[in-house]
Image 1 (cartoon, rainbow, N blue to C red):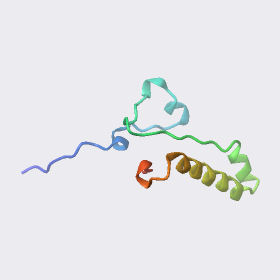
Image 2: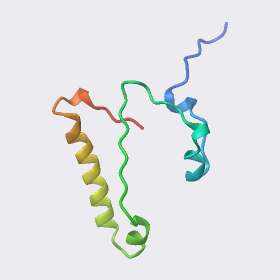
Image 3: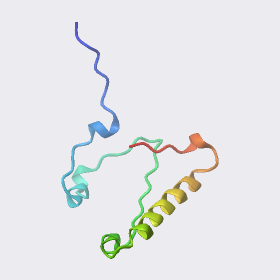
Image 4: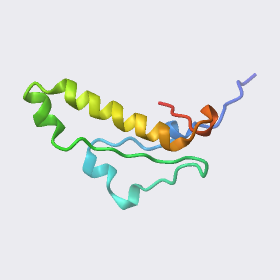
Length: 84
């Protein structure tokens, strides 16, 4: 008797990337599900800021970006979901 196999989740089906440049390759493009939104934020020069001991500021800006994304989703909790 064989176990039923479920289809892979979106993330499981993505081919692994080993560098940021590789992830930017148009040949690797994968469309996200039609009901998803993609939010991208960048704390400019965050690596240097962390090296300079400004981790709390970088962390605060990252949290502010998440807060902005959640605010943009609207008041209904089910309007926007985040998963790992």
